[in-house]
Image (cartoon, rainbow, N blue to C red; front, side, top):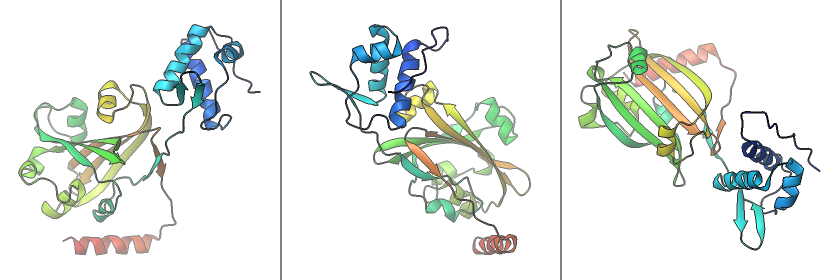
Length: 265
């Protein structure tokens, strides 16, 4: 029998949430397989030493999160978990053609001029607080499910006609490279685990507090001007990330970069 951690009734975390998290752990560890019936409410209440009201609240939460399914007259069963979508964790690259091969091309939701951008964005792009920016919001979709949200800001004066002409092949990277002939010298990335806020949860059709992965990127031109600041949020329980680190030949890497420069000059 599973040796559940005792519910810490002095914890600020509600007892029902502790129960739900422990059941989720048991499901993820394979103790209960998909389509298997859960123990009865009476058995779980006794095992976790909680009231039936607390247990039912935990079960309601698990059903809302699609970990379990209730069938009247039959009981509660473990839901068949959706297979996570596998994304190549390609941080923004200096090579424009890399993004064109991605299985997920983002869908543009918003694209407009922004006259009062958030201060942290202005600071990242090293412009004044009232400096107009271009704001682009995109979503990533796989099999009709939204799995990622991408917010991008660029100084308006560096991409003056982007609203009229749109993006080249729906790619910001290709647009900056081919239309504006910008050469990116550095892309700084930060990655962190987060819980989705209420605003992004609505856009992602997710729940407030769901786990997510946030990638924040800043693209800088060769003259040290920031050209693009972006934040991409991926839903944690729908997406697995894959990336491979290979041995890098410095000479070959330099040759490839030089070849890329010539092809795009």
